[in-house]
Every structure is written in structure tokens, then in C-alpha cells.
Length: 257
Image: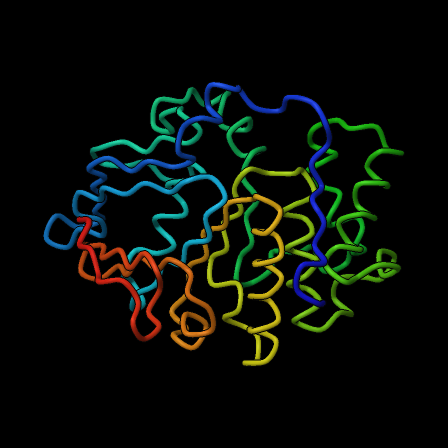
């Protein structure tokens, strides 16, 4: 899909608290997370991500990239410190409030997490059906999302009949169909060949061009070299912020944890 063709899905009207719109989208304050006392995954992470940013999180396997994303959608909780999303502290949300948090977050996984024997449209429609949206509107929104990821007219096909790259596009459509403020991508190119990986990166950049914040976790250094997005390197529990990416002549690194 040509760059810039991902058109915004946002409808008119106020969707978020206007006060929250004036705050950074994500704030990490002294976030500490460990599975073993002698090997913390995050050691006091301090970091701010503004609305509309595209941020890579990278580092070796086990560095905490997936853990960080799981903290954001409340699949795990911090041991100490706090994470603010749209001005709300995630760790203080009541269990009944977590579905509302996740309505504002789209998630794309490395292994797609599609239901193989369901059609493409049925897979993409799940988040809208959970919200109880009328079926006619569901069909419209699903069709729009598929068009924007280059799969227009493919909705009736079974997910298992698609190629890996096409299945990942279905996963992206599902992530954005609810018009989230934030998209989390957890190694989304890990199962794709190099050219498809570059194409998938371009799709996420198109999403970001509409104003959606994108947090993209990857260990693939070649993707980081394509364009100068902000990079946060995780290693041994410590985060290093590289605001202008890892390209030559980029801004100097800033240790943030």
C-alpha cells in the first residue's frame, strides 16, 4: 500500500476528555517490574510519550519489550511506580474499568491471534461486537478498516487461507477498527520475510500519520535504520532513549532508567 493512503477513521465529535487531550498520552514514573528479585525487567523507568508519536522499543530477547506492552493494556501490573494513560493511572483502575482502557488501545501480535476458521470480516468485527455496535455499522466499519490495510473485498475469505503478510494486515485492521488513541505492535514483523516486514512498517507509519500514537516493539535492527523514529533501547532493566533514531548523526542517547 502506498505511504499516506491510510485515511483517518475518527468520526466527528468529542471522544476523549478534552482535559486529557492536553496531557502526554503515556507517562512512566519510576516503573519497576521483576519476575525474579535478582533480575528486574524494568528498573525505575521514567519516560513520556506524547500524542501522535511513533516510538520503537528494542533490545535483546527477554529485555522486557513485551512486558512493557502488557503493562500498558493491564495484562500485568507494575511492582512499583506508575503508568499514566491519557491522564489515568493504569494500576489504579478497577477490574470493571479495564475493558474501557482497552477500547482505546489496539494491539497487534507477532502470531496474529486470528481465529483460523472464521472469515476475515468476522475476525476484524470482534472488538465492535464486544461493544454492542449495530450489525449494519459493524459491516461498514469492518469494510473501511479492510480497505485501509489493502484487503478490500477479501472479507469473506477464511483467515487460514491468507498468507502470513495478509493475516498480519487483518490483525492490524482489527486493532484499528475501534479507532484507538494508541496502537501497540508486539514484534509484528517477526514472522514475515524482510520485504513484507518493511511493508508492514509502512502500514504502521500510515496509521501514525493519522495522529494515532504507535508503540512498536522489535528486535529487528534493520527496521530501525529505515527512517529516524524515536527509539527506546531496553537492556538489563535499563532504558536508553534515542529521540531521533539510530541513524548516523542522530541526537545523542539519553539514559532514562
